[in-house]
Amino acid sequence: MTTATLTRPERSDVRGTAGGAGLGAAVRWEVRKLRAQLRSKALLLGAVIAPVAVVIVVGAQSRPPKDTLFGRFATDNGFAMALLVLGFASQWILPLVTAVVAGDIFASEDQHGTWKTVLTRSVSRSRLFWAKVVVAVAFGLLALVLLAAATIGASLLLVGHQPLLGLSGQVIEPRAALGLVTWSWVTMAPPLVAFTCLALLFSAWSRNAAVGIAGPVVLGMVMQLVGSLGGIEAVRPYLLTTPFEAWHGLLAEPRFTGPLLDGLLTSAVWSVASLAAAFLVLRNRDITGG
Image (cartoon, rainbow, N blue to C red; front, side, top):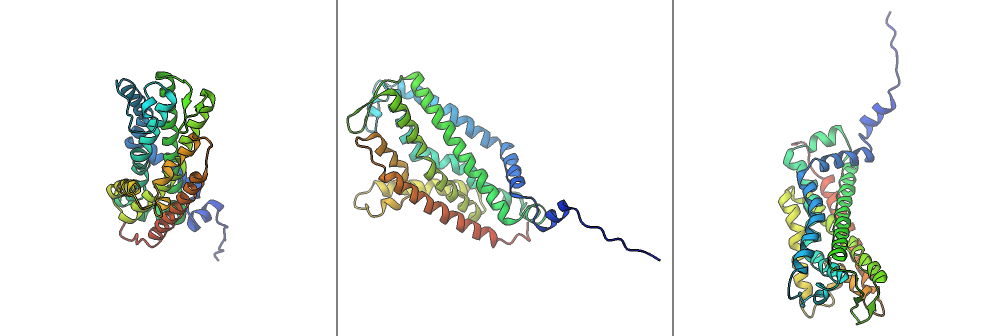
């Protein structure tokens, strides 16, 4: 006579079959994959080195770039130099920096044919989606911090920390100027996150890393062009590039924060809409082919 013995499955087995790895494990796995990429390491290294090179090159010019905000004082004032670099980075660099990782993070699964393996054996679609979102956003913010720290540090060390002349002609003492310049860089975070979410959408939708990286950058250039045109005041608040200019109010007297609040709302709307669309794309993805 054979007696059947019923054994209770272990907790880890239940978790593995029911829902796969948790969000924390998925995030750690995505971080490991990102750390293994030479491109991401080179990007972070460039965020530290490039500002120093720019400060040296611009500081050596006999004629400062007078056609930009704070450009005419950049060679004589470190705070103005940091703001000059900020203006350039917000227009051309930041969307590209964050899109390099976010635009590839979903498309790489298509490139290597790993969707089926990851989603059927390791982690659910929703957890994988949010893990990739967390890692992409964290990488973009880390790149911003490194870029800001390197720019401000190099500007003050190589150019100087004299009192800054504000946009209204007021003189800002060095300690206050340091705080305002730092906060000006901080205001880049909301639109940077929004561009990250937009790159995630392009990556999930196109299944192509080139499109995922180039799409947000090209769209950002188009928005910059549209925003520079006259007669479109009703449209400018809704452009994702407009929040990159909101820091100007911090350097005026009296200060105004209306554009900062509007930019925060605009960035939030773009972020939520992009993530919702990307999630729907991933949820409806047929992974049976790999």
